Amino acid sequence: MVSLENCTPFCNLSPAGKKLVSGGVVSRHAASATPLLFKGQRTSGAYFVLEGRLRVFTMAPNGTEATLYFIDPGETCVFALNSLFNELLYPAWVQAVAETTIALIPGTLYRQLFAEEAVIRDLTVRTLSTLVFRLMAELEEVHSCTLNQRLANLIVEHASADGELRMTQQQMAFHLGTTREVVARLMRELVAARHVETRRGMTMVRDAPGLARRGAGR
Image (cartoon, rainbow, N blue to C red):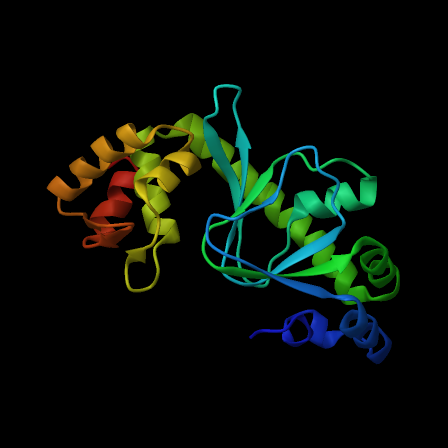
């Protein structure tokens, strides 16, 4: 199992910092689809993904979900950091996308590391700036692309190097802020165009260039 001490930037901490982390970090394993944080909850620390993936999402009054961002291995949740430093309640929901292992650094410990370790300050700033970029890109896509284009881009961006995307159509719908029925209809169009092949809980990319062109509106 991957340990936080072996991950960047924690492997670059000072000896004193490494000692603090080894004595204060708590690891937690979550099965796929497990809810981890709820809107309005107080955060107890900083969360780092060691293995798996987390989805941070919002929810409309009618129950429709929309993904805000994903947290992949080596990344942390910027909402949790913001809630931690500003003593705010968590503003969204978090769910494990796959079997996931996270490391929790208690709030007081993370604040101490932030004050004493330059690599932790750098990590925090980069996390904030990266999220701003991601959210701006997502906002631009929402306003400038059709749902068909956004679905194509979702598949291209999140498929593995082998062209495999392990997301159900319901999960795609959650990410795009629409319904599974709409995604199913659009997926049938992609299959008919031979851009993708669908399997149970998985999509295989068959024509990545064609899918990218569709995502760009060409």
